Length: 275
Image (cartoon, rainbow, N blue to C red; front, side, top):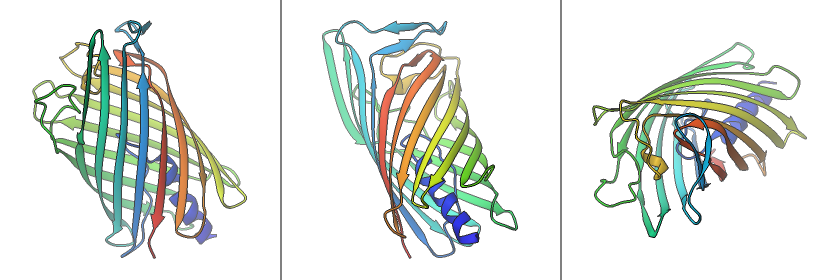
């Protein structure tokens, strides 16, 4: 039973990993390592204005981003894990007669997670802290992000509410430090999933992010907006190939928001758990 529940927690984490988002943690295991490679595609040709009304861009205008990331997590002990994430992004902004593309390493993240499992290993409470360091400068548009150092604090609670099922409730706070207008960001995620045939899992999650800043201007380069909110629905399917490798496909869609792009995208990521 303990082995099965540990696998559930591992698969949960694999299903929730995505670029530019926090994910629910799981205990890696003392002196063990998990490596996750991710590809993410994002496209937006519509946006929600400051009243929440959906507006279409001018014909031919769009924002598109493709990104890759490598996450390496290592268990310092049975309850403490260290992780580093290195992302690379390529984005294109078409606005009127102007078309711009830029690529590069974005915000490198270094984090520490502390886990508190229940006695039967059916429930986990995790606290996570991390720092983000930009590996780029905003000296050529389209900018890859805020170009600001950041700190993040998060907590999640994972449990098994029904047979072969799992659920996670997660809250994250992020603060960008290098500019007076921040922003401060708050994110809440609720995830429900079910395992099939001990190898396949289907997961659905609903997330809502609020970003607060005195800078309320809307930028068609969606990575740069500081004052917005958006709710996103995610659907994932993961398949355990063997004891070490688990690939996952995820699709997501922006349901509603303010000062936010209507995003449609997909993730493909593979987690390799080293012995």
